Length: 472
Image 1 (cartoon, rainbow, N blue to C red):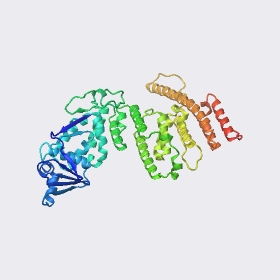
Image 2 (cartoon, rainbow, N blue to C red):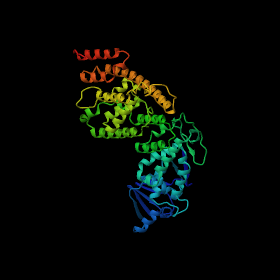
Image 3 (tube, one colour):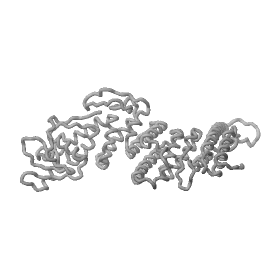
Image 4 (cartoon, rainbow, N blue to C red):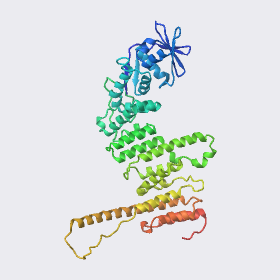
């Protein structure tokens, strides 16, 4: 990653009796208090570069030996202050993507501008930020991550927005034209000076090379960055979907396999901590759903159903559940029985799986899968005429409908097989009401089943488990 060195003097700061000082032949005349720490320093090097310290010193009374200045709520704390102080003394400091945000906020707090002295710290940090860090992929990512510690400062200084714009522009640029200071594959570290050439240039592994690094961003920054990427209109929807899948795997690990949270939260001794974690996961889930591309097939049905499982467990919003249900229904033929095994979370329902939710998905599927007319409109005159352009359009539309009807019937055949397999799984649940079993069995029309072997097998399982005769 890129870095910048400022100053040439060796570090002479030291700690004595809980006070930080700097070795010098000149006696110190300034005490600076920063977030509980005391610094014994000199006015001349600090005041010559820090307008805020000039003002504070002019407003505060001088003691016999030292003048005391307090800096409450200093952005970046003692580390950032000491970085600025060392710059004032000409001591060598190293700036990189990891500390530039803290240094920039601290320099702005101290008002280290060009009006005070030419070549001051703010100017040097801005040059490094715009000419180096924003041009490197990993540098921009790390810098953006660092803004999380200083959200208001970073927004006011435009650091956050500029990082987001830089990252989005690199995603939208052809990979060969992007300068990567560290590849998404996370191989060995690549440290380079801003003025030097990169020691190695790693080529992205695929068109979605950016997704893994972006997955490290917090939810707010990720949402803003992904919205900027989507608004560019150059990234295929399936790559957006794959990026969201990577992000979900990063921040919602095994969420669909978690225990029945709502049924057990009352017995948890650390329920406050659990509720906080659940709220955080819910926020991630809602954000991912809001970023899903509108195109059908942009994400797999399996992924949609996993999100729906998570929404059920985390008590997600009804709008998110409805959206996931609708989208899963459109691609239901892609699903597996395992995908449909969504845990039940209702306190009033003792069934293992949420059968009602699957019934809703099936209803949506059937609603979207209504077959269009299977024959073209007849001519009112009853005899052949010269085919007009409108007649040709009617035929083309009819052919399209026939193809749609064929695809719809094929989907129904696959879904019928899926439903019968699902029935065999839930039939083992002793608490499954007969009415729900029948509703599921009848949700798919008979003509969608090539045979009824799987359905009969599900009925047999249900009868053995429940040990009673059931007449259909």
